[in-house]
Length: 85
Image (cartoon, rainbow, N blue to C red; front, side, top):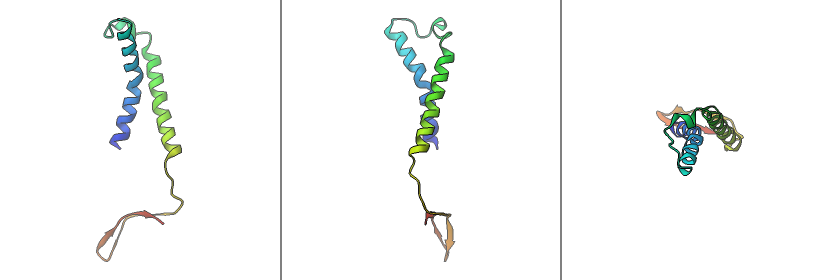
């Protein structure tokens, strides 16, 4: 779960990092607010779209099981893990 949260956060931050890299290549100060004020909204939208696209892609390509799920249970004093039948 933590991995998926970290992936989402990194994908959201990615457009901001790319824009900061662009500012550095253009020899502008990436810490100057004047360069960011017009672009923050669109960078946030692109970051959200990237995050949503990753969630959708993961949902479409995740392995699916055709059987019914049997939850973990106790048998003869031992824990039997959950599985698909």
